[in-house]
Amino acid sequence: MMPVPQNHPLRAWFAGLVESVFNVEIGMADPVLVGYLADLLTEFLHTERINLLQDGSGRNIEDVAEMVTAAEMALQSGRVNQRLTVHRHIGDFTLFWTGLYPEQLRNLRRRNDRDALLSYFEQGKRSYAIASDLSQENDNPPAALLRTLSSEFEHCVYGLGLVRKAWQSPDGAGFHAVNRFWLS
Image (cartoon, rainbow, N blue to C red; front, side):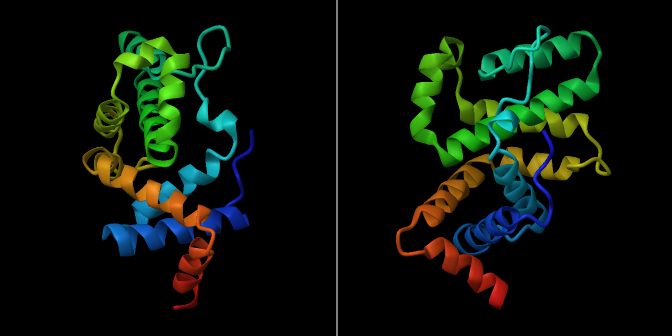
């Protein structure tokens, strides 16, 4: 699956929405964080990106408990880069669902019994923290951003919920919020 091009209009639209919400509503004027979240929303438009991880047989891993198991297996086999990738994906996955579609969490957990015992909030924070410990500042994304995603997980969840409200707004608030930043 090819990534969505950098100049794609949806990427710009998400960037404007995230920037507006996080700067104005949340008070987090961090361009690196805003860019990461806009990229996350853009890339997760494709369900293949949401369920990016696969098990040894090529089957998509769709529950967080199994993702955690994959990360631990990578730890035991000494594959640091794989462990970093899995923990970053766990953080992204849990942030996406808790921030944008929290009403779907019950359905996800019901479908994946193992996830019923997990807190997506705690697992997301934990996974971003582990990923930050495994990465360097010159990595993409840098360790500092992953630390921020961990420490500010709740704020990011809240902010993504506001982004969703803005794009669903019947009065075009999402469109106006984006234009306010582009025209100023």
